[in-house]
Length: 317
Image (cartoon, rainbow, N blue to C red; front, side, top):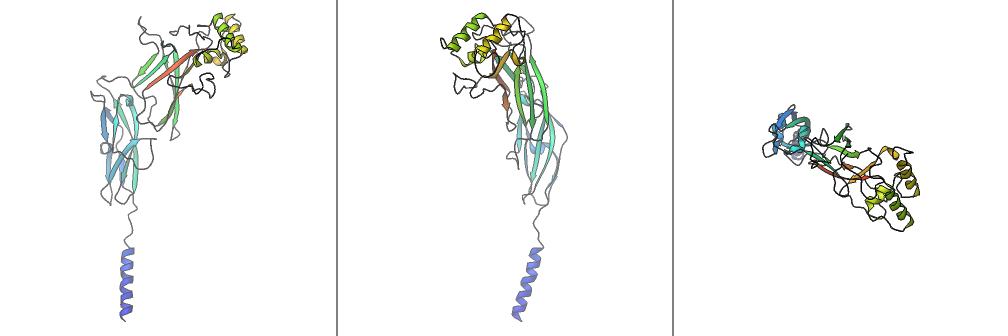
């Protein structure tokens, strides 16, 4: 009898314990709609996750909050705040997360509109184009294109034109407020191009230097010179490059191959083999990964006038 009673008690306690199911319901979370944020005179503003949340509630308290820019991570964020600087001026999309005591997660997205009403901060993006002799290169287009982790894509062009005044101090600079893409989190590529004045800097003296290099009499001593000597842009310097340039000098043709008269590469690129800059192929763009946080705002390129191996081309037009 006693044994049966003990078994009955254990069964009743088991049923009661089994009825206490774990909490699997995520927190209720809603974000505020687009929020304007003004950069302070110190050119920095910090937003906490709670600043962007309209409401949050859950049965399992307390609720932990997190925030990050879209496409810059996965899972619950490690931060509960974000810093915005001049490079962020414009529309910025962010994720807000909530985690309850049981580990259940919720998230929502919203947009922050960062402005600089005082105009006191430096531009957020600067692109610099210079020759190997550090002269500024003007009249350069830069294609800025990319795609983020949500498969959203964008593309636009920016242009470095002729300075409006007599000063040449800003030749080769492009500056603007805002980031390089409309939304942080984009895998973005900056690709410069310039196809003006193909004969600029190209003379018979360049042909002589290229010929000596091919014959091994006097090799070009800079990877930039070797790249400039590759007139048909096939990754090697041959007599065919001399033919291409001679036809250009004689007026038989009016353009260089591939519709470009300049080539650009990141200024900080280090050639693994300076005597053969084509192997491996050198980059002709700067790529910003979608995980970059904060986004970089300064980009430098070295520009090479195709066919001009002694760097005599005028870079300002």
